[in-house]
Length: 360
Image 1 (tube, helix red, strand yellow):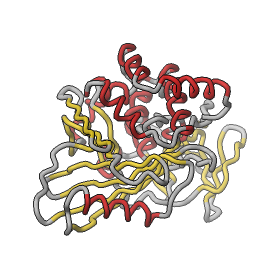
Image 2 (image 1 turned 60 degrees about the vertical axis):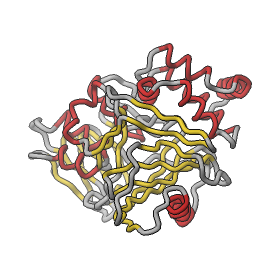
Image 3 (image 1 turned 180 degrees about the horizontal axis):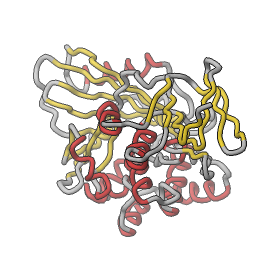
């Protein structure tokens, strides 16, 4: 009976990163288990450039020194040469992490059951095969409770025949319907003929995939003025906007979103996971960042018309301040600016509700 030293359950960005940065050159036996390991998924991982992300510069295919926010007739543009907005794609990350990998093998299966047997774990796969390992890193999807706020999205990469003139990233464009929750479009110009156009919603309930697609096609036609295009790729996801109860025992560890890496107020997780991994700290986010996020999310839950709040925050902060706040390394003065951008009465109510509530 073969007993692996380490088993990764789920081979998303966090599992790949853990393998690359901790075990790539180690003399140990590793198994990666993921039903969709060879799926051609190629989601974008976005972040603002920081010290701890600079080691991955060669993987960045796109970056923008300017990004925009739209609300009704208002527009805010941020700029930062020091901390541009960047993306890395999953397939590039996967190739980087597994380059010259010699100590890891893979099984394309789901996991049905995990049992602890003395000094190792017994992992039962969906085909009844059993795998044994001394240590487990579990990065499977977070269970999405029906009564909790979520960020859910579908995005299309489109190819246009005639070159477009969009230069800046659009992080939030609220000039879309708001009848299903807080809804905005997210747009990244990848080159002069390719765009990522994504419909994102903050709400407790997921929507029919056709709804997002209809929103995207309407936005492309009405807001971008593009009539002819081809969809060449799609990404989608659901992210928790609530604190995840993660497990971190000696030999069974939750990582990635399952381990609490997601910044619940924004959905960013990739850079937080890598920061935690590099520093070997036990938590992804500081106490004050988690406190502010809880209050902010509670405000979003209690106020369906929250689009204007993001514009106020964008107005208050510079590009570098906004990026540092989103990346969890903001100065205290920047955090104060963010707090003062919130409606005073609504923020106070959210503070009280967050303090009294067990959830979020």
